[in-house]
Amino acid sequence: LETTAFLTPFLVNNGVDPLHLFIPVQFQNNMRGRTYGIEFSTDWLARPDLKVTANYSFLHMALEADDPSQETAEDSYPAHQLGLRASWTIDENWSLDVGAAYVSRLKNPDVDAYVRMDVNLGWKIDNNVRFNLIGQNLTGASHREFNATSDLNASEVERSVFGKITWEF
Image (tube, rainbow, N blue to C red; front, side, top):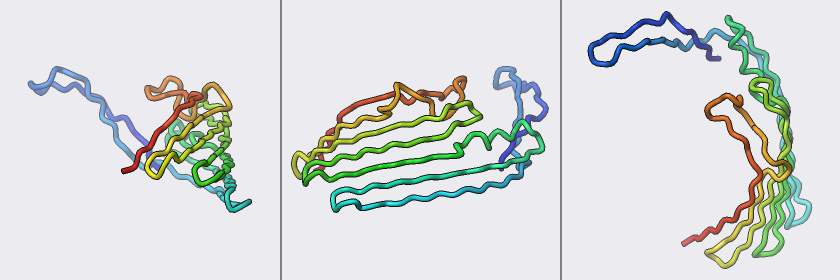
């Protein structure tokens, strides 16, 4: 379990680089923790052309660091995740996949729980060409999945619908 320590900063004047302040960071292992959880997944072949998959996971983390401000990792993972997917082979040329997922709230960074639904309609045009119409995050306009809003890499997962053509040769 990684922690960091900021060491004493100092000015660098080496005659090559411009004068600058150097702040050394040392990676350490000053944390202890316990985790427990459960995960299961099951498939059900409802019919020869219809498969249903369900999954659930629960994770509990309890961390203790020498510096309590570094114990944020335990709040960075969702405690509950639940998924349900159905895959239907309509006929030899058409397929439909529908999936829904629930992810519980993250405390740090503050990310609300969300539900998303994705749909993929596939059409095999011939032996080499396939077309897919895909809808993602159809249950909401957008949601954040991780990272603080102030994070440089923070982004919202938006609702989207797009097509894809695959040509195999």
